Image (tube, rainbow, N blue to C red; front, side):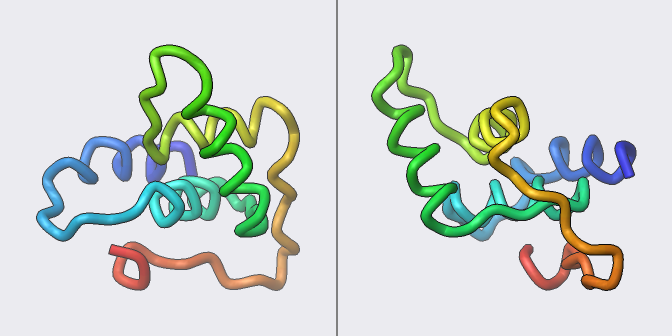
Length: 87
């Protein structure tokens, strides 16, 4: 699972189609088997933009949600999105 996450980190810049920070964040969370509501992600984006230097990307929001234990573990029966469904 960690290999898939590292692979995702290095392949995102090569993708030509622009993704939102929210979509990137959701992808990184799903790679690790976690999920967060749209409101939680939006609040994290807003909070990160207030802090200097104000650089916000999917990885930084994912890290914030995981570090503060905001993201919740997805049940084992849930289907995790593949690369094709998001990218």
